[in-house]
Image (cartoon, rainbow, N blue to C red):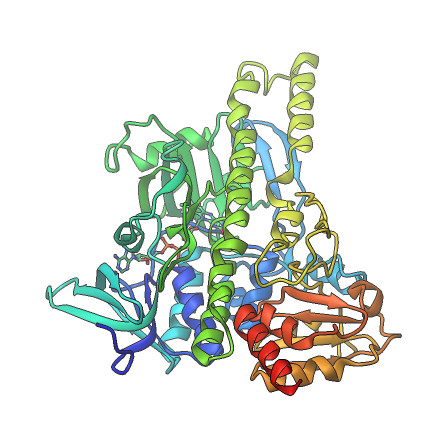
Length: 560
Ligand SMILES: Cc1cc2nc3c(=O)[nH]c(=O)nc-3n(C[C@H](O)[C@H](O)[C@H](O)COP(=O)(O)OP(=O)(O)OC[C@H]3O[C@@H](n4cnc5c(N)ncnc54)[C@H](O)[C@@H]3O)c2cc1C
């Protein structure tokens, strides 16, 4: 198996869900070819994810995909309001007011202190987002989409990965040879199974019926006004998917419930509390969320990303959103190694950086869910719609509970504030304590490992648009940036100089005169002057620490 001379592609990706698709596009963006193997002939028809958060929109904008995703999603004027009510016919008792894309864009435009994201969030169904991403992959010469082919296993030696694929219709079997492979094949990952990687956490923590339907009965469905999510005191939820006629209902059902054993029309009727005119049944099924994180994200030349290595409860929207950041983190690192300027530690840093994020997001998704699980226990159905003072008091109590637990869609600290502080390729000293993460608040920082904050540039664009390929040295008037740039050039590491000057509005947000930012927009290092040993720094942040440190020591010795 060993020679890399006859590879089919540098990277094989198993699974073309949102994470596999974005990984293929990230690799292409970095100039690396991939084969994307998908067992299904088409992208999903299930709605699944319905919010692409601000960080994911930044990452998609980086790949030129944000406008396409927005065009496939809910128009920008609609709010993200979440309503709590007894039923469609009953009383509203709580509301999380959440800004529309337009409102968020206006907030962003007025913010120069780095605390806002560069992009607003976006409501869009996963089915529509996947279709957009797949179209882009099919148009891309660097992405070879193979479907319907099922990955049945991966094997590897020191140099090559062999991925066995079987055609879903003909049964034809092929073996793909690549330098690396990535399992983006979802919760039941065959790649994870092939690697023998276990997961920690809990399986099937609840059982839900999902009913996805088309209805023009907006009069009844929007009885409480326009909404994104409408939660009922009895535990069900309606999602407005397109602000027009596509809706999804989720309802908790007994654990033993099997797909096909529930009447979807009855589920909608029970959840809403009144009959709703259904024009077309689009999908219905039973689904069971897991809260699991893989023990390892890497085995040799094979990696896991997305649901293949972490599964969360949808509350909070940390599933696909966490997976997209995996794809970008892993994509540029694989490309750097394939391109020859990244070292082995860069690949190891993928798990070191991304697994702690998944663990935290998994736990927070559970906390957000618990708010909804408490609702049926707290709500007194006999009192909730009552006109009496006692009824009003009960609704007020429930409203206070809802207002006090609104983190599900406002946890900007979780979405933007994670810091890869202990990453082996981030240059911070051991005594530097990373800022503590407040789930509800994002505090801009250039602490090494943090997402570099968004600040508007003079041309109105975001500084984030500079962080894309190679490293970027953001310079607010340092005396000697050239030493670092020269060191990078000598080591073959792409590094661009963005000179903003000491008086630029961004200077205080960026906190140091020099901030070295990676292709994924995370800070690799910062300082007021170039470090004494620029070679060592470049070697460290590109994962070639030992080799380059040794090489420069040898060079110094022979010079002496
Ligand atoms: C009801 C619901 C609501 C959700 N809401 C949100 C939300 O608002 N925000 C959010 O971020 N996340 C949300 N999620 C989670 C989100 O859907 C997942 O996290 C996301 O789909 C993970 O993407 P993925 O690409 O890793 O895996 P998947 O989407 O599972 O894609 C895996 C792909 O691999 C393919 N595949 C599997 N096995 C093989 C094989 N052996 N060979 C070849 N191909 C294979 C599959 O066909 C599939 O196309 C929600 C999920 C559900 C169920």
